[in-house]
Amino acid sequence: MKPQTPPKKNNWSWRSQAFRGLIYQLIAIAAIAGVAWFLAHNTLVNMRVRGIQSGFDFLNQAAGFDIGESLYPFDSAQPYWQAFLVGVTNTLRVAVLGIILATILGTLLGVGRFSRNALVRGLCLSYVEFFRNIPVLLQLLMWYVILTEVLPAAADAWTLGPLFLSKGGLNFPIPVWSTGQLWAAYGLLPGLLLGWAYRRWAISQFEATGRPRSMVLLPALIVLLSSFAGWALGGAPTEFNRPVKGDFSIENGGALTPEFLAVLMGLTLYTASFIAEVVRGGIASVARGQGEAASALGLNRNQEMRLVMLPQALRVIIPPLTNQYLNLTKNSSLAVAIGYPDVVSIANTALNQTGRAVECISLVMLVYLITSLGTSLLMNWYNSRAAIKER
Image 1 (cartoon, rainbow, N blue to C red):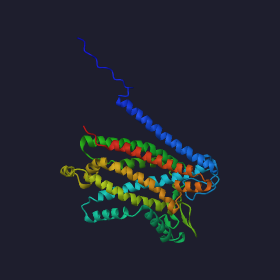
Image 2: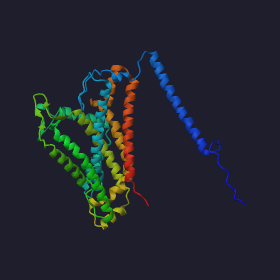
Image 3: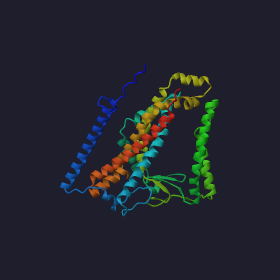
Image 4: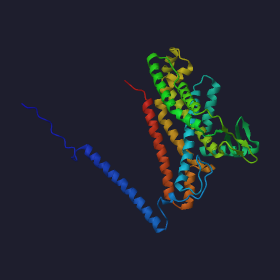
């Protein structure tokens, strides 16, 4: 007797759950697309009736305004799209530096909450409770007032070696660009590769022998030595453009404006208080027995935290840490309140001059959407790398 074969399932039948789910998803997508088209069409029609111009053709027109702070030269004769690009670079400069500094400070504060020294624990707790309970906008305004009202004028600037701090900001020496700096930049690439290779080797040796090796300082030293070797091969230039005191301002050298410093300090100190709580919660989630086992193996307090507690806490720390990075990036839009020329400030100026409100706001939304999605993708990748692999 031949065994009966089961009847074939008809995947295109309405009785198929997968087929019904596909149809429902297509209907939902079509409905969302229809609503979006209706809103866009209705907006364009109403703007045309009222004689309001629309479109992104204004991006190729001359901006007609100067930007006080930029990483590269910009003048009023350049088009709007380059002005927006200046705003984007200013936003990214604050966001990236703020994320790095807030992570370092927040991690130190979070780890400090577990110190055996009561004074250190109390200072870390006081910092967290103070900065996270004051609105970030007020903190930005506070730092801006301090930097522009409390600090002395340029003629009486505070001096720390080659650095000058005054109402005009922080002035510092910068190297005069030459072949040596270019070769130093070239030297970073092999340094990064060697540092990455050493770190991989150090991790494999630690897993095989249990002997801890430098995972951060030595790779960083390899990168610096490689860059130094490139600088030496390029002629080892040592000429610097140093700032000097003028009658009304600090001349020459590089400068960080008070607006930039206020935004960076405000966002860093505010976000670090939340990151400290994220780190504290992640470490507290690790079983106490893990610390006791580390002590039984002869690890000191520093090794216990660095090699045992923090690696296990990362799986809890990274997801909320990603939210804090996103919040810092989006909070940088508050910089417009103190006159820092970020992308929101540039968009407001362009909107007032051209009347293209929908277009300017759409560009700002697109910038923050791309930066947020990029941050999320990077942190999700790191989260998958840091996750504990179970057998």
